[in-house]
Image (cartoon, rainbow, N blue to C red; front, side, top):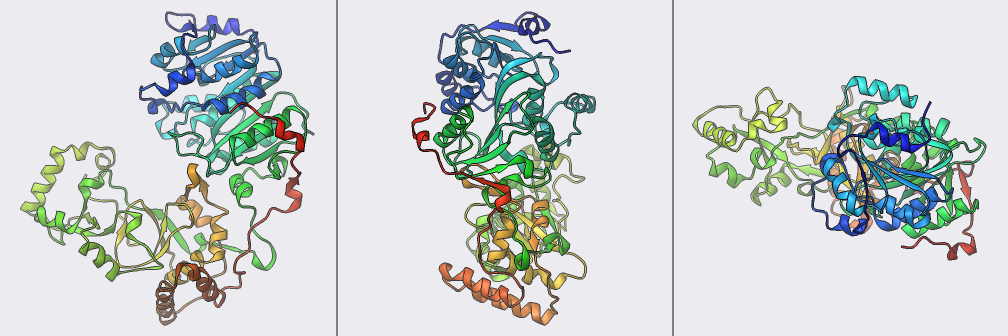
Length: 569
């Protein structure tokens, strides 16, 4: 049985310096701006005040007797809650001792601050919970397999061991929310697309049934120090399962504020014209792509195959110390190395462009003294020994990646990729046929033809660069802040594609020539040329935007009175 009286919660941690009361001597948001402490270890990112206000508005609307911030930081969210209700008891949990001590003066006066690991503590039940959980990848978490088993039992769901800590916070916050209590949690939206997010989304749909999820547009970077697309989950414990759970996109903080006003007024219309009912979504689907880009088409334009049917995708070579392992021709000469000590390698995405990357293009990079060679010695010698000793003096063998290789200076074993796929993109993705013989670092993923499909690399390059390829990308990409997109190798393999007609070597070579010719077209005409060529190989439409089927969407007009509803920004 959980304790609803949070005074008991205090006694569970009553030891020297474990419980403090804030004095409110300084403004929490001013303190955050001037805070110079390094916080990356704990994944701490301060919540902007306008966001804190709209979150607090939801949480405090139920007039909670007690409010918890399980990742309190310097107390900004608690201060926002105090603006709406002075009678509520405010409690903040923080696991970092120095942060807790600083919060004594910056958090709102009278707030109870407790030093503890929230995920492993028994907080009891709270009428209101407001949170900006830390962003820490699973690889950096200190939890044992025993801890993970405990989390699974407590949260009632299996958990991928790559689950980010913020998703664990979301599940525990739901468990700690009292009946009729309300919670608002801001977190990276990546879990709505990530593989580890499937179990979290299943819990959202079947158990939590949030009132709403507001996802900020990828072009809107909420956190200046964290390049991520953000989402706010609004929850209420004990609401009827018949009530809708909505997911909507907000293109501004003001638009999100209007949406919260609509939730509080119990008005189904909202500032954004399109809103998805979570009950219609599958946990395995990429929710962000459905929200931002729509769904895959049906009928003659549907693509029945996947890129992974024909190609394997692998990330590029990770060196762990590019400055040491990568060379320009001048660097090679300076250290008296030879071609026997290095191999051609693209080290930056900006160094490769167009539809086909040829050996001539690579030679042009070398002539411009670009760093386009990678250390991979096939022969020993005095000069190589001297260079390796230089690396030892710089501590290169002790760095993380080199220290985990059988021979610290030998690169990962990677073949030359058939196609390069840019990891990050904005307007469009680079898909480049690699005819140069060069390898690639992690700026590109590499597509490698499966046995029997070796001649299809030019054809796949053509499709990926067509309008059909762009629509396929829109179904699998991951959204980051400031309009940045990212692809993981599994995402590339999951991209829909048409059935690939077989090509013989002569036909493949002819297509390479046609791709190279398309590079000479003006950028404004290139896509049309690619689509025309693609139409001669594939039965796909040239360019039509995706749209969600109407049974997946609730379409409402903005309510005129909304213009008067706003959280201060």
